Image 1 (cartoon, rainbow, N blue to C red):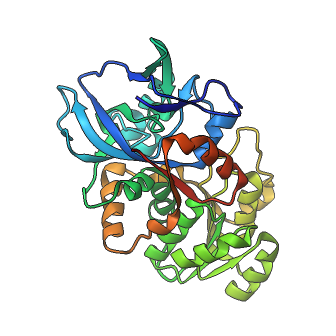
Image 2: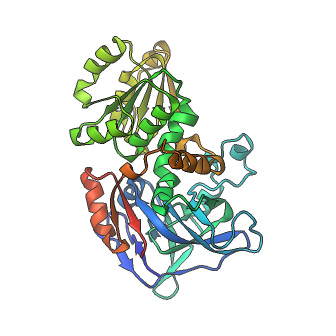
Image 3: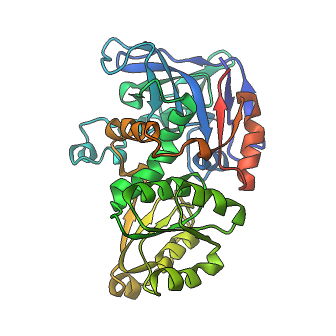
Length: 361
């Protein structure tokens, strides 16, 4: 089968080849034929080494497809089911799962560093990003990693729910629990930021400010729910005109940079919530003073994978999409083929594209 392989961090090109096979399935595994998969900034972070992964690795974690085979112990899905790939499967028995934080479960994440699900060039092992590797035609995941979805939801839309939508909308609904009538500032208008904006809109926020240095992104931010859009240098004027200088109730960071976290902090009122959504580098330090941390009374919240329980949230977001409350089509900037992935990665590095979706032949 075909797939795109990263041999080493920093490689200029992915190795797109057609000789991949899958390791044997276990009794609790599910084999999925990928129908659509996103090109996400987290994939770019794997290619650059920002997010460490074992090598060689097939990137891709935001995907949807059809179940083609299940292990003997699997009862949740069957061949023919449409599923969304869950890149953080919950084991159900670790300390995080037992306190209802499945998005923090590390059981299968750790397994993905030692369990190479792919073979190429004969019998050379290759890993899948986060245990997935959706930039290939088929994958094998634990049963918790394949969540059944309504077949009326197109695969391209379902793929977006697998990461970007859940991360962003979930940050607003689950982590921040944005209140109706509140004010929200969102730093970054990429796929995650636009998803946060949609979550804030769904929650009933009355003022939603999109903050992005690229004015070309402002129109789409307004289309999906932002009431206003500014560049970072215009932020303080917006704080004055939209909140009377008080600051926003919620400030979301959706970039993955310490500077963006500080922008969200500056936008947020005293006693408000600052929500960190973007995946940043380990050595990118946020310069907050102990004085400000205490006396401004702001709450810093981490929102990993939107604080979601995907068994509940994937179907819920699919229903929001079907009801016309979640705009997924506007999030797709291009539909491409697997063979186009190197061009897609280059375009993503340029910062202008939103979400490119690989539609499998």
